[in-house]
Image 1 (tube, helix red, strand yellow):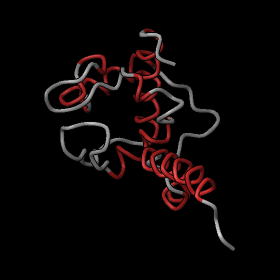
Image 2: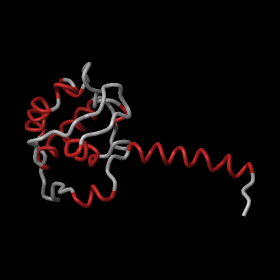
Image 3: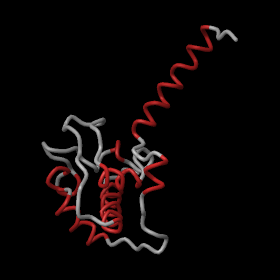
Length: 135
């Protein structure tokens, strides 16, 4: 079967967008299957999430998620829920992340946080994003 030049021209951008979106989705199926995420009964605590964020994340991501010279701001449109879902944060903490939206180098895995701890942190970051009208 031959593809016309028009069909190829239509297909290439679709593939490029798919690769870009997939590259931003840090959670492949194998990783998700191995991860333990908080259950349906999880009740996030924003105050505790902020405390955990300040202790474990703010050195690089800045107070309130505003970023530093060491790491990108999380209160930024690129990290909105529609682009980086909550599970991306769990994967980042557990596995680390290759540099892809920033110029700060790779993010290492963060030891010592439980799944519930990350859930509190994610809730805090999402609350900060909401305050900044990032949805």
